[in-house]
Amino acid sequence: MAMIEKTGSLPELVKTRESRFRFSWFKFGMILAGSGLGLCITFLLMVSPRFENIVRFSDGLVPIGLMFLFGGLGIVMAHYLEKPKEK
Image (tube, rainbow, N blue to C red; front, side, top):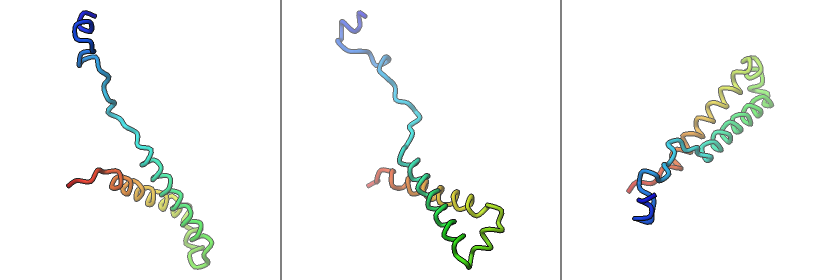
């Protein structure tokens, strides 16, 4: 209390610390957008007569694989778009 009365401000030790964990909503949105794009491409492959049999007989691996692929691409894109530009 005496330190506050003397200096008029809080000491450096009492100031609020920034959290180490920062959740990026931009990255979360890019993951969802990439996963959605993967599902849309899966749907288009299932409707296409040329790829219909491949997708149907893969036991559901094509939709999951495309979701992971495009979700990962979304994370990479978010990293490069969110990164500050170095000069």
